[in-house]
Length: 342
Image (tube, rainbow, N blue to C red):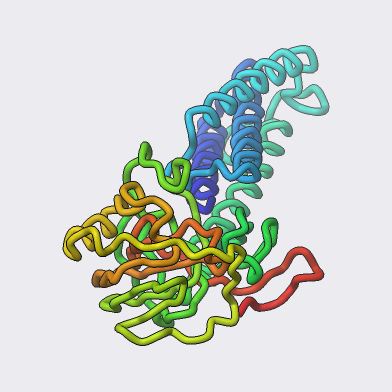
């Protein structure tokens, strides 16, 4: 969402730049040009508003793909809203002729004050929106992000619909559009609850019954880089030793699925797991009896606390560190569940 807000802010900033430029050139001395440019502003606001509305609605349905800036459907709806906004504003203003409120010609060119009142009002709105949106995008990208729990894979730690803040600076700042992070304030540890982007670069890939490409997940870190991880009848073993009691774990199914790792060479098992193909071959058999596998360097194995109802690293492999966005910090909604998750 932060990248979407950033580019929306840039779009509004471009409009603001050209408005100042046209004002200095005296373009708004022309009543016709003033009508057209104000209609452009209304169209831009309609475009931005529809983009944010469709993104919000898709987010509530769990359809937002964070790896894609805007979907074709979202852009199409926004363009339709922009066209409607421009037409409404242009023909409405032509009737009112709002070049100036007192009916006198616009002031002489040379600064923002040269623009008629309607353009000066547009500039004020553009400045406010540009500042607010860019600031919000920077805060969300670098420091804190709001996240809504989309499923029951983390019960009872989180419930579906819980809203929480994610601490994004704790693991370092990711340089936009790269895999590099800088200024890390802490290391990812076993037991951390992390929010991450699903580890796939193929939009058509399906996992756990659907396309997960670009979506944000929340899970608990179980395996660190270099760890040898294995599940035996649901119990987790790290480097041959049991992980012990996990007070946060919930098991809903009294049955334990048999494993199938004895039917596949270990090197093939590891390779299929790393390339997210293991569950496609042996399906639910990885749920309770899994591995052993070795977590690759720079990667982490994550699992849901609701172990019998979680689509996690057992099925689709390890998560690269650069895709981990931050650590779950604080539940802020609903009020009855406010607090720091454990």
